[in-house]
Image 1 (tube, rainbow, N blue to C red):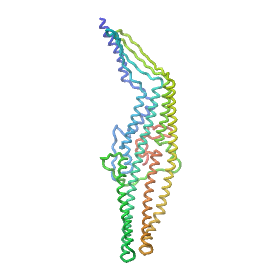
Image 2 (cartoon, rainbow, N blue to C red):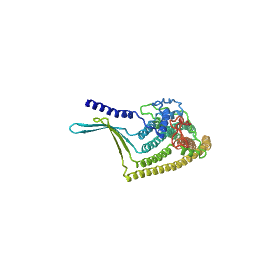
Image 3 (spheres, rainbow, N blue to C red):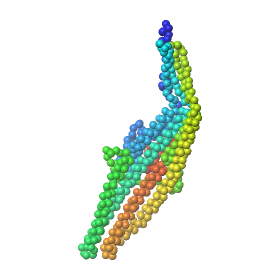
Image 4 (cartoon, rainbow, N blue to C red):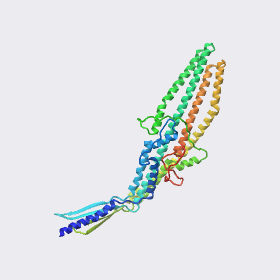
Length: 468
């Protein structure tokens, strides 16, 4: 009879511990505000970037594909962006880990002399001190915010790489076209020199000079055509295409970056939206959260549990423990280290703001300079050089000037035309750099969150639609 009672008592004791253990196994913690916002942001971006957890259909890059299609393809396909995205996604999950209680522990205690005289299964739960879980969640949320802006920076850097290769390829074709036109012009000048030589009005030296110029231009065309391969490799890499995949088509139409540089609003936009600044602001908030976590370490941690005696039922042994944070110098050092980290983060933010202001001033000067040079080349130098060449050609045919002056006029026109192409390419790359790298204006369809001037973190709205 006593044996049966002991068995039933043991079963009841184990059941009394198993029920709460089973309930704890299915529990969920309470979401913190930063965690809810981070998950909402991740869901919004995932709907644009990886809708059902998979890469969406990529646009077809046909021969006449628009620049926006190249940009969309790159932003959805570039592995650097994907790596930054999943780094951010992992950091969002870390918020849940940090704000959760430690797992409960199932314990067993036994007293053994000649026989087993006492068996006590139990359940133990560690409970961090007041405010520690919230402080840890704040640290994880601030770190997640910084990871998001690293993802956004990767999106903008990829867009800039695509635009840079796109413009360089486009203007490469322009350079080749100008050189081929010049080659045809030189062939005509060579025929004129031969005709004059046949009637004794010039020597073969003029013919050889024309041939030398043609050989130089032919070699230059070969060099330019050969440079297409590394430029195409840059575009291919920016699009996230691997070595075994076919090359994308070269851009068949030109699209400029629309950006208003009038007034001082663009720099204000940069300070509001630049993801590098936003990442550093997140690092400052991360340091502030670390200070809060260090201060919370002043409080003790707790453990609470319950053990059931199997052989003397029903008898339960409550258990409890408390840590003693007695090492005050250690706690003070943790707080001081966190405060020093905050000051360093604030200094890095200020330094980046200064560098951005200087970079903005230099690039806007470059833009104004290249715009003035373009106006000079288009309105003055190229038209006048063309007229000078026509006058020199007529003067050569009438014997008023020598062939050397004719070649000099031809070379001046070619140089001005190539300078104009270089200036146009430089202008477009400066505009792309200003809009993407400094102002943080994302292209249309970019899988990022819009920024609010009154909110340091990305909002939960859909992606901003801005023109490329």
